[in-house]
Length: 169
Image (tube, rainbow, N blue to C red; front, side):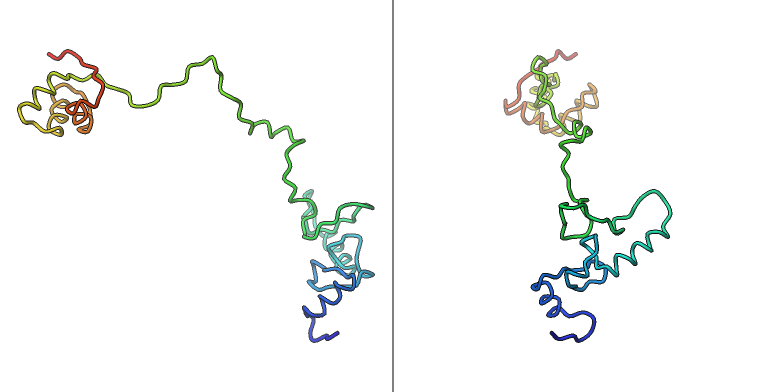
């Protein structure tokens, strides 16, 4: 084994092939005999991190603090033992995300355009006087207070729109 410098990928691969492990703190491979109770760290890093953890105050425990594994417990290959488990099967708060089917007895809201009652006869009369749809829409707004799009006026003139006629003055 070549040992040029602290970091050596060739040395690390050989150690892992021989049954070693990767320490997540010092970032090198070690022999299996050097592994601590926490499978993420070697014994030296484990002892150091435990001393660092004693200096911390507060109730929240950071994820890097070593945790001894229970006998037969799962060993995770990455740091953050078990923090990537996203199951919500036993969580009561997940009921909020359940989308219930709509009530069948209730009538759904009507979709589509909401037709305004328009003075169709007046629109046809202005169109016969060679007035354009934009001018008709402006005149309806100015004289009768009816706000309508010029495209709607075009549809009325082409006969594409259902008529809801109102009586005009």
